[in-house]
Image (cartoon, rainbow, N blue to C red; front, side, top):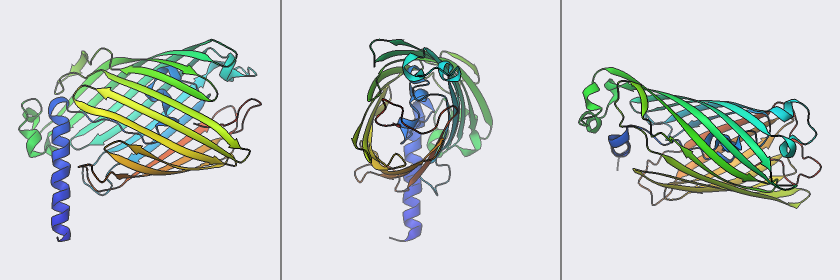
Length: 323
């Protein structure tokens, strides 16, 4: 098979994938392989779980394909008690807030999402906390009718914008609940609780389904020089297959981590990261699973976390300092 034929097949697969995903709801699912570094975006209850930070990531999916998804994200989390200099803010603090900005392009669509979240926590025991959070979500979506595929052009909802441009705005909110400990956490969240009923502009999307998200993690020091960190993620929404994935990594000398992860029926990844004084850098190389019908291209994802008030050091009672 020639390279031209292979590229043609890949392009047709790409078109088919997006036409199936966008036909009903005209939206994409946001994947983050390094989800454990961005817990609060998925669950407002986990805002400030790792203190006051600035977080960012860039994800280039199916690199080399025209119209392939590209995602850019930045957020700032502030723990009130950490800013006040409380001795153990992770345990003694009560309130935190965050602002998140995400920009995503895929095919004919460009999305910009602004999310403001607030979390309050209650101390249950000497080492456990119950965290409750809520977030307000404002999203603008721009449709470029000149970039529609032939399948999308035939869709009665979005095909009417063929050859033109359209904008839509959606306002909704998220809720989250989490049980946290220094060694593990378990959380549950709901996105789009109002199903996108508050909207403006030209409605080329038929609302947004409620998204249910479960996150869990465990970490333990195996020796003074090595720690084990495991994180799991489950997401469910109407119209799309369930999303189940996990990451496992080893932190060496509290400075470098290596590991891997798997998104069931979708892709696997290899990961590498480095801890500096206040900065955490992570890289993911993701490749599709053999049995999946997705594009054969690779995905690259870069993540950065910057701590505002403390260094990447373990506290007196901490065994591991990252998730």
